[in-house]
Length: 325
Ligand code: UDP
Image 1 (cartoon, rainbow, N blue to C red):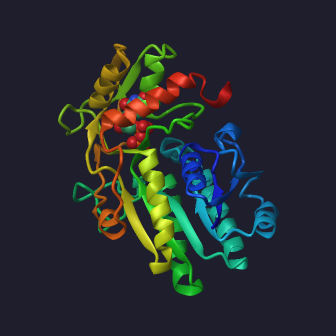
Image 2: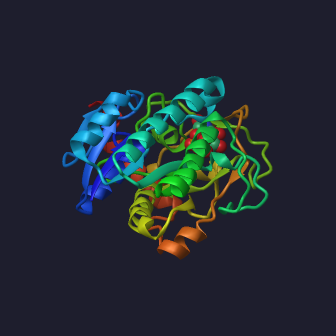
């Protein structure tokens, strides 16, 4: 199948592209390289540099490459930044997504995978969080993803769209060749590993007064290759109907547990200091992925935090400056 992957030069997108290419799919990557890296794009994928805000550029990709399915990763993705720049997130993330959807409809492409988020669950009533949990977006970022989910819902009803919305919890880890490289880096595991590499003095723990087993936030870390596999299963299931899944390991780890595991793996003391809470952080986020396990037979290959951090450590050691070298 010919698959258009927006944001295919980014962390998750590039690893999904790698897995799609391995499965023998034809991939066209569309990315503006704002956060993505040209070097992250698998050499067997076609690369088109362009911006989803540019309607003509989006149309040109459909005209020229005739995709049969779309995976949409390209997005501004920072929860904290979205609190400061609501127009960028509720504006740009939504209008860029709509440009893509309009072209998809115009070109009769009706298979669509949306990368959505756990940031829809700011005030969960049950833990782990399943798909029946009520939606409370935690930020303009989360809201922008929810708006696109709703668009897809109505395009299913009115245009025969078949979509899967995959709500990721904390994507982490690396493949042998591709890993996490953001500038600035704000995510816990790469920051912890940058300390182990001697690139930072310490990690700041954002608050230790949460109602959790050691006072630090609990998150559900899912290996990015397992996430990629879920995309492929979801794509292959679209002909049986649209679907929405929460994606995590179903197990939560505190920040201190992450740091301790990284200490064991790297052999580095990784100094840590407690700082203030980061606004907008819920205490605990753990996914129930029972639905995708049951319906699609998804089974994580790397459920252990140790293996997830180990794979990231291998990649960061091999690419200490990320993709910049
Ligand atoms: N975190 C931290 N120090 C850092 C970066 C993150 O204590 O330098 C915490 C953050 O507050 C959250 C957890 O680590 O509780 C995971 O954060 P990350 O940004 O990696 O992912 P998020 O949960 O925000 O998607």
